[in-house]
Image (tube, rainbow, N blue to C red; front, top):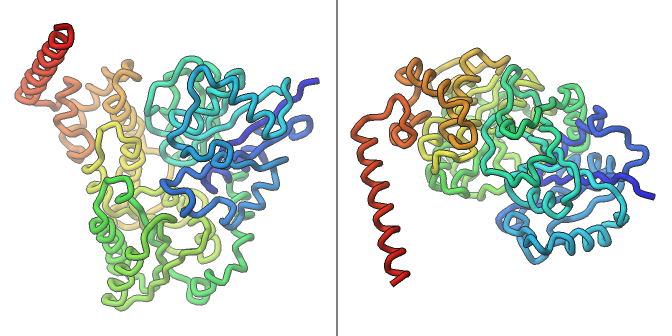
Length: 451
């Protein structure tokens, strides 16, 4: 007799919390009759040295919602989760192996819930369990951007829905829309209850004591953009110092810095020196917890970041005003243009006040009418072959709005490449010459090989 087995793949606690909220809200049906497996993947560059999911506060509470927990890293060792995928003729063998290893019956029906379907390990899982239905969940602002890579139709046609948090009410996700995949919102109430549950688990952590003794009025969210070669290490340190300087200028004298889990200790040291020079109290919180857990316990009056999703959750779920620093710098460094961080940066840049321009911090509310057209235009410029139907509306938007938009939103070379309004004839001519030269070089190489 066959039964249903649901496999839920996670790599972050925030993503696991999103899935937990979806389960609690009944979005995956009743638990009776279905076996639920939590498949944990550590996608860090060096997993052996990175913070593990089971080391974070709240993990055990979330894991308790599943019948078993298995490690993807162990299952495919010694391969890296982000790099490994099965060869086409090996998928049947791998499915048999994983069914045996995870105690799944040969006739059990498989249902997958995965993140980032464009890349491994989600793509590998979808290929291995080739008969399964697939649910994709998005745990942050990237759901509003375009699909990064084209999916094989054998995977795309099996995707039933995109589960996402309604972080920006009124803004519809572009992700997977080209395949007719409909978005479905994970209820705010369910997600907030999961966040509260996680926060309670951290209440006794002694590392929180310094924060609770003198509750900070401002929280700074660290980024780690040097690791993905967007900023240099020095520029990233400077970005954090700029966050501190902005908070101090806004009148905050007690500040907590929540570093990115993979940030080097030197970042905190540089920030501590800047705080000492400014005469403010700085607490660096390196406890294994979500930023949302920090909001729950210390109730700050301000959250400052660059483009972290935790900025938006501070506003959406904790009513904390937010401000941004450095979005223009980072967006200007993104290469190539289709970089997946572009839309999250644009959303924050468009909605969140700039602390360095003395704009008052504010809550992020419903999306203004200007946001969806901007995101759609950017989505087309990022992936023009995927969303050809957006070309005309993008051209119209550029004619009406490009002059008043930041230059890093739509760089002129990209507009020239796509032959869109705002590009210069000289740039288009250079591109034509460059393309002609590439054609000639390819033709010559073919001739040499044939000779």
